[in-house]
Amino acid sequence: MISKKGESKAMYIVENITMQEFKKYLGETKTIVFPFGTIEEHGKHLPLNTDAFIIQEALKQAAGKRKFFLAPIVYYGVCTTTKDHPGTISISPETLRRLSFDLVTEAYRKGLRNFMLVSGHGGSLHMSALKETAEVLVENLKGIRIAVLSPYDVLWKELSEIAETPHDSHAGELETSIMLYLAPQLVRGRSPEEYPKIPKPFTVKNKVKYWPGGVWGNPNKATAGKGKKAVELITDKIIELLDRIEKQK
Ligand SMILES: [Zn+2]
Image (cartoon, rainbow, N blue to C red; front, side, top):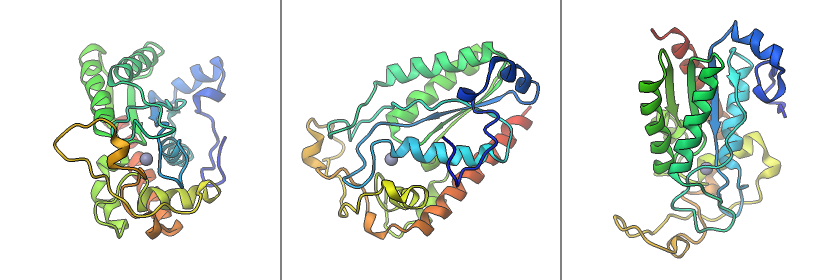
């Protein structure tokens, strides 16, 4: 449940609290964070839930420092380039839009007003589905504040400075480093350096043919130290945004 590195009082972890506790904590905060992950190939060396795992750990660390409701993660997300690889189980943008719309609307009905949709997966269709939902919600629900983000979006520059590999991305140096720091027992050796060879701007079938190993970057440059820096950056950013969403007028 709560990792050693993500020590938390677990007070506001939605899946663990009672009806009475929910009511009581609502007097203390109107902010809820919905995490989003994927079940997606991450090369031969990282587990399918890498995106979900990383964002949950960062959020648990933030939950030790700020009061907010932390919702259970949505494990499934929209995967495009990896969708044909073994293990990836993707949903459509339509499903993600509908699901995130329902989750926020229902939480609003229960009294929550500040919403952060935080994704461990930075895929463009995945993020645009969440952002489209936020556009509709902000028109529909009176008095809400809503932010949609992925660390690879808001911290793109800072995170790419940690990695030595230029254009490092999916299952590459950075994600491998973070997993080495958070859960080295889940890292099975290293996949070789690789980059997708999809003939852009074409959309192609059988994506595995153009990207057999499913790695984008160089996992061999990964270290737990780089992972620690990345997790600290992500956690600090989440805390900064929590403070801003609570103060925003
Ligand atoms: Zn990932």
